[in-house]
Length: 574
Image 1 (cartoon, rainbow, N blue to C red):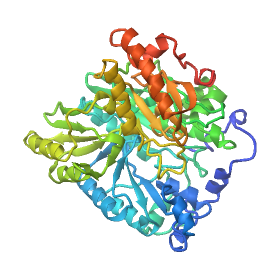
Image 2 (image 1 turned 90 degrees about the horizontal axis):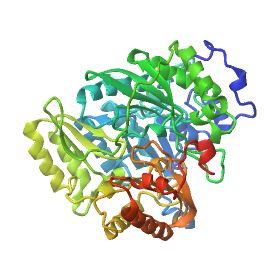
Image 3 (image 1 turned 30 degrees about the vertical axis):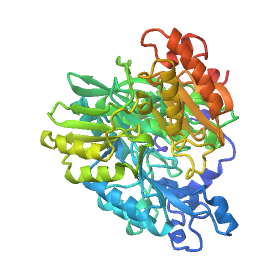
Image 4 (image 1 turned 45 degrees about the vertical axis):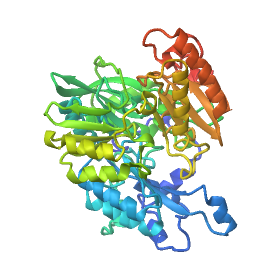
């Protein structure tokens, strides 16, 4: 599918001077730029000019350690430039051999030595210096992993419901996640040429789906199996909701236009839930995926990047117009959506037996950071399990880890390793397991406030409030993100904190446990102490006046502490 096959309707194109990123992509020679030349420049640890942006299409972000930036400046040194790499793992499935290779590289060649599980159901390396970058890509390539299109203006890592309770349907859904990921990948050979020393080719390539200027903005896709919304469909541009009959996946409801990012102070930006376009049979999934991407490619805003995502295209052109164009391009008509319901979205911890008689162990990884700590050797434990495990490992979109497909004879040995190394710890509260944060400081250049480093103590404070009011066994979906870009998915939490400045957050309330309602701002730019004081009051009222089994977010809506966000464009800032 290409733009030439379907003439672009000019009434839906934003006119004006294109953003600088459009020039960068257009001049990049299909994402090559001068990255190879930059790699040989030992005068700086970073990438210069356009390459700073282009390496994102190869799965990397340039960062530095902000904790030591000022000290290095005093020494007349540039910031400690390094890259964060995000791998492409559709559905988050990885083999034990792959895990061991990842573990060794993190230990030997990254500044922090950790493996970071992310909300995009993959892992990240943090703190890789320029001389080690090519080795990093080649190490991953040797075990069948790449980082193509995990950042930049492309379709990113495709998520898939990870907990294998219904393993037959899950396997089918996972295969579709892989197919969709491959179908929407960039076709340029730039990645292989630059990082894997592939043979250079004349630039006669084309990008039939993404277009030679790629998408106006990042694009996220998921495959989800109800009733478990563990990948948060409303955080994503395109979602395939699996519909099963008699234990077999037969088709998908297609949801389009979700997204959580916004810009502080700009009320033309807002989080938005995805719209349900309707049902398609499974054989049409790739055509519909390509059609949605190509419509966004052609109609998305290339003038103002803050309004460039699919959610804003839908708001501007109208849902029905967008849907009709997708039907035309895919050659498919959406049927009425099949009934489904989301009832949960957190990970199911502990052991679960699958339909094939094998076992699956989900372990809680606070903040997704796999590292050895005093008395809690998570990284060592994962490696020891990988050495004896004959199944696979599954990374969840909630930053946790599943040791999947465990043979009954290995179950006790794996549990012992997990317990000995702190991967299983009795007494972890429901509140801690229902809390999540993005990486934020010190490595993320966009961070305005702490998130990952703040979360553990913030959760402890909330645990104490729940205990104080006699409901210690209950929990609140609590998420913290260091800036308004949405990586920690705070805009689908019952309590969401969005970083505004050092120690200050915008305080959002009123999401639901199923991940189908956006929380509304309750107070702006307030301190951690002020947040706790408000939560103390509100949790006390919930404990006293809440209905039986009423979730915290639902209680806040019912008692009119905050109004529900029904239409984000109208209600979010009202």
